[in-house]
Image (tube, rainbow, N blue to C red; front, side, top):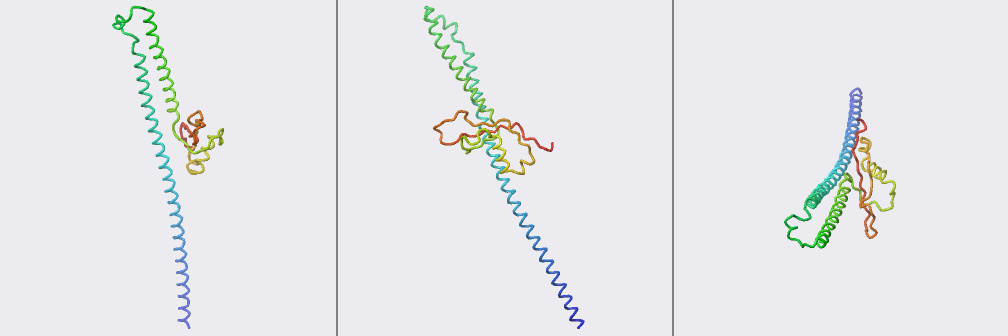
Length: 204
């Protein structure tokens, strides 16, 4: 009888040990599953960050291209300004009639003035294009919350990167559609340009 009781006691302890072991294994599996899901979400976030960096690089390429165009335009303007309307040697060979000479010289001067104004407008347009930086949002329909573009951007960031928004204070300096004038023949909505002076850490 004592042996049977001892065997029963050992059997109960063995069952309890196995039960505890199974619970531990189950907890480990659940923890591993949670860790796997967390890593999967981290991977998705990394992919989104990579996409943002790619778009930022594309924007940087556009900015560099605009800089080169500005430099080229300024060089042309400089050449136009520095080019004399007529050299002394050429004046000696021109028609003696002063009225005809003035009429001939007036037309190139007017053309040069028009060209200078055209280049100045081009530089201004390129500079306006150069100022917009940072983030471009596409696909937002026209006339949809036009007066609330800045908050729309913050909502997009909060929806896609909630942890990032909590850690960083996103400051929007300017938000506008580009180009400024709406083309009724255009089938796609104009892009939204978000200019951000800095992303300030809330803890600092």
